[in-house]
Image (cartoon, rainbow, N blue to C red):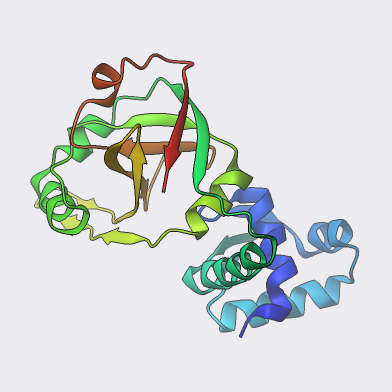
Length: 214
């Protein structure tokens, strides 16, 4: 299921990655993909019905994001191509950048920490390391990993969203990429957690090139 929509899924992923929302129109997408607007409209409706995308029609056009089903199709095709070409994306390179200070607050919450311990196998240092990456390379790297879902929760004052995590190693230290359900970061910025303060443990500075492994 979904293979006939692969080209359109790839288009969306290239434009906005696996998790962000593409704001566009059927005419613009049709023009860039060199097919008819009717074809794009039909495919988008079918893809929504199949659970491949989430679609919302607004006064300004369309808002489209890839759903779990769409990510599964992309992953399946990636793994098949990977097997053909034998080019496994086992390493992801990025540049360390300064964060906005929110990671420490969220990562220290016991409702998240309890799940980090049980599902990822470690108590996370209360803070994240931000890594600036190429979003196309991220797609390939993450597609070879199994997601670990950290459930959201509600307190008396507010609701906290879920997190999608991917286990990795940073210079031999076990950690995880964390993608919040709600994030202020662009797709090109990844947040990394670990059981230690990575900056001090590995003597990392802003602008340092870092490679993480699956």
